[in-house]
Image (cartoon, rainbow, N blue to C red; front, top):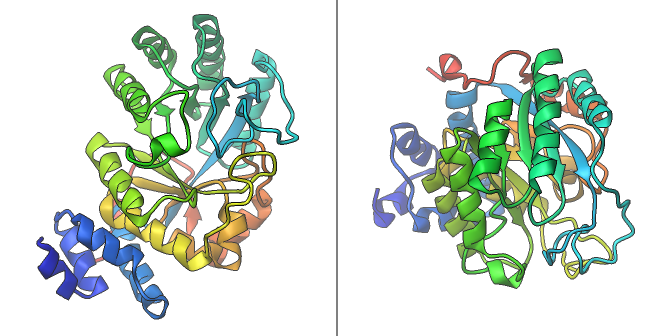
Length: 342
C-alpha cells in the first residue's frame, strides 16, 4: 500500500486493506494519529472491525503483582521505583512463595486469565529466578493460570529456567522508540531491551512488550515503536499512558487528552492487527469517561491496581465490559477468528 493510495482511503477502506493482509506504512500511521476529532468515531469503528476479526468481542483480563517494589538501580524517568525517584511508595524485597501464590488466587478470583509477576531492578539473580520458577510451578499445578513475568534484563540460562518452569510469556516493554530512549533512561539501552526480548523468544516464551504514551515523545516515535513491535512478533502490546507521579522527573508532564489516547490505541491496532492490545496503566487518568471506547481497538485490560498506582475496582471493569456487550475470556487464550465479521 503506497502512501498516496492510503491517503485516499476512508477509515473503513483502510481497515479492509489491513484485513486483506496489507501492512500500513509510516505515513498512514501518522494519518491515524492526525485523525480530526470529528472523524474519531469513524476511526474507532474501523479499528473495531480489525479487533473483532481476530478477537471477537472478548476481553482478556490481566492481574499484576508487584513481587519486589522500589530499590531499583536504574534511572527510568517515568518510574516511581527508580533510584532517582522520591515518590512516597512502599519498598520491599522479594515477596515469599505464599504471598505470590495468594496473588495468583486473587487473579483467579478477579477473572484474570493471566497473572503477571513483576519485579523492580535491572535484572534478577539466579536465586531470584529459581524463586519465581518454584512458585510458577505451584501456580500452574493449583490454578492453571497463564503466567507472564517481568523481571528486567535476562540472561539466556535464566530465560530457560523460567520457560522450563512453565512461564508462558515475558514482558519487557520498549516504552518508546530507539531514537528517544536515552531521554528517559541512561542506565541501560534500548538495545538491552531488544536483546532480552530475543533471549526470551529463543527460550520458547511468548513476548509481551509495549509503550508508555505521553513522555514527551513525538508522533514519529510512536510510529517507529509500533513498527518495531510488529517486527519482533510480540503477542501482546500493553499501551500505558503516563501517570505523572510526584517525585519522578516526569511529575509535571501531562500532555494527553482522551482523544489522543484513543488515536494511539487505533494506531497500534492498525499496525499490529493480530496482536493483543492491552489498555494498561493510566487509562483511568487519561481516558476518563471515554474508557469504554478504548475497548473498540483494544481487547485486553489490567484488572484492579497497577504496580504503585491504583486502578478502578474490578466491579467497575466488569460493568464496563458488560455494558459494551463484550465478554470476559473464561477459557483458553486463542484469537476469535470464528467470530469474524461476515
